[in-house]
Length: 340
Image (cartoon, rainbow, N blue to C red):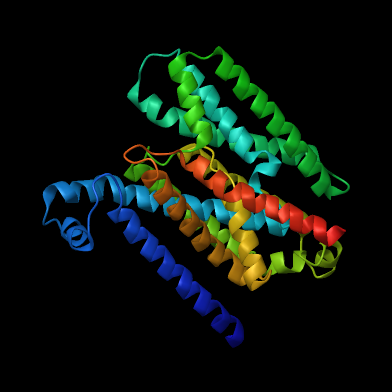
């Protein structure tokens, strides 16, 4: 136990330090650049204009970025542990597609309704959350039988089918939408952190705390599950209940993230996989470090998105795809070499 704690302490301190450094750089970066002295004055309120930029714009965006990155990476770590496959990603069981379809339906519906501020603020995130949870429950129902339990293969196939249906629905709505709604749909599918508020920050951090606590509670059973479902059952693990809880945790995490920021890909794939290669598959270290690693990756991607075409901003999903897609191809090539 002492060795486990000591082996976790060093990478945890490094990850916390890197997160803090990237957070400070995020606060100091933007169209109005602050040096460290000006940043301190803005935080302490000595400069009113700079203080407003920090407290009303950059700080909530930075905190939201950390929470969303942690949620996506935790969901990816849980998926990879559940499927016992380092290439697993939350999108493979239809969560992201269902959330995107729900958001698209809300955007198309809002364009036909009177402009009610509360509906515009809550309608899209709420429908995205409902869409993600509904898709997950449908996939789980299709893949579960009363006599054999939940089949991982059927879960994957049902997830692919639901994702295809969601994509077709989004394409149809895009075809039927006017120019303004079409632009909203396009930006939503590319992911954005520019729409942020303190209410969204509180929601994201609350969800992150719940998912982190629930996932860490299952750290030891996830380690047992890596040996195989049969071995886990022999060890006394209720595999069916574990699958159900993990899938719902992932659905909740991804649905909240998509509801707030739109589709942001590859964070749940890249971060847990790199950490498994570096630190091994033990979930006691993997889960907290995945949360911090996801936060670091999304903070870094957000810095690139805000600086590469400044004063304009790239969609954050484009940046994560440019980072994650080459890494995914590398993983595929590496997997093929092992099989040959």
